[in-house]
Image (cartoon, rainbow, N blue to C red; front, side, top):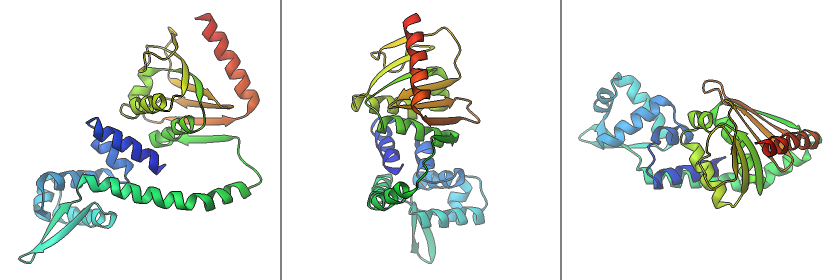
Length: 247
């Protein structure tokens, strides 16, 4: 959701974490657009051919991408002596763009919720794929609980979510969401109640507010599901408690 992206973007800027490509991806840019935007940002006001030369791209392709960036609000141009000089949008203005989109969605939420609530059948299983899809699962954890239990591999989580995971942990702590973790190594939050399991884990499972979130942490094809079903939840919590007591 856009406001969650906004939080992550602000946090990473404040903490000077080198994740500019990830942040720009989250804002809707593709790899070529990111390359052109960053090059234009570094060069300052520049001719198309200079930007194209810097990124080793032909002039026509660079021009098309700059037009796309202009349309998305990431670039503008001025004409001096009959020549077009492109200027990348100041990064500080990107936060304003996010805020505007966030406000639009907030205004639309009541109507969107009415549509959702009017549907008689609500699915009990949600499936997510890709890194961005899996982030939706973690955001669901933050939105829908005051405490949760987890069985997860910190190593595997960091391989997939190198930048996102530390901010998930910080936001959980800020929201005062309690946690108990079983992991293959000491968790990022060393103060969180945890126990170590001497097994290699390639998944993460979280139990919270009657839900079970299960994530397979294959870096190339990550996939996850959320199950809303009380019996599944009770069984997984029972197994978690048994494992917790045995460690």
